[in-house]
Image 1 (cartoon, helix red, strand yellow):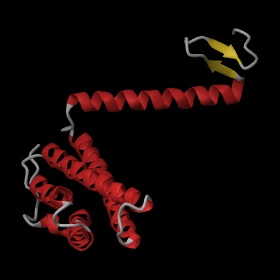
Image 2 (cartoon, rainbow, N blue to C red; image 1 turned 180 degrees about the vertical axis):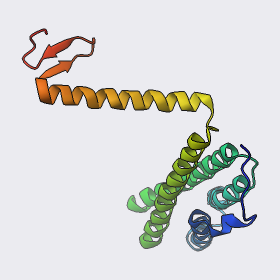
Image 3 (cartoon, rainbow, N blue to C red; image 1 turned 90 degrees about the vertical axis):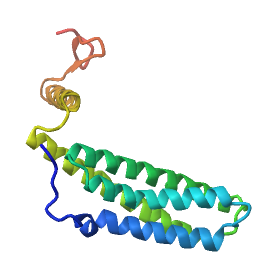
Image 4 (cartoon, rainbow, N blue to C red; image 1 turned 90 degrees about the horizontal axis):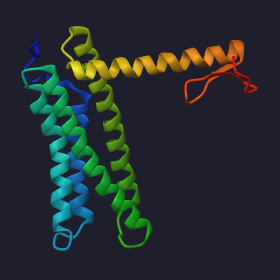
Length: 184
């Protein structure tokens, strides 16, 4: 099924897109204010580029032809966010070690935004994957993996109830035993 957004600029209404823009601007402000343009040149470029990619991949994915492609681009966006998070976490560590002199509050503020964005994007991806399951457009391999995971969860729940009701357990070799290790 081809993904066709009703509103060509609908991504601008997404909270993930809006927050990605805020992360980008706060990152640029942070790198400009707290990092040295000469000695931190590569770090500044990497942080600014990673932050920019978060929002740009949301935009590009939104315009893709299928929901599957959209989800892939949201994954790229999350990967860029993870790169940025790594850089900010490293700066925080360096601040704690006394190597960097930055505003700890600004680092924490940026990290809070990054973690919040990651959480929102995860929910957005999960929602789109549920949509693909309903539309039967999720790739077959992923459908099988989901089915296996669901089967494992059901089996785990089944054996928990069997243990609670009858005192029986299934060991790692698949043998069924009483809690007192007697075979049944």
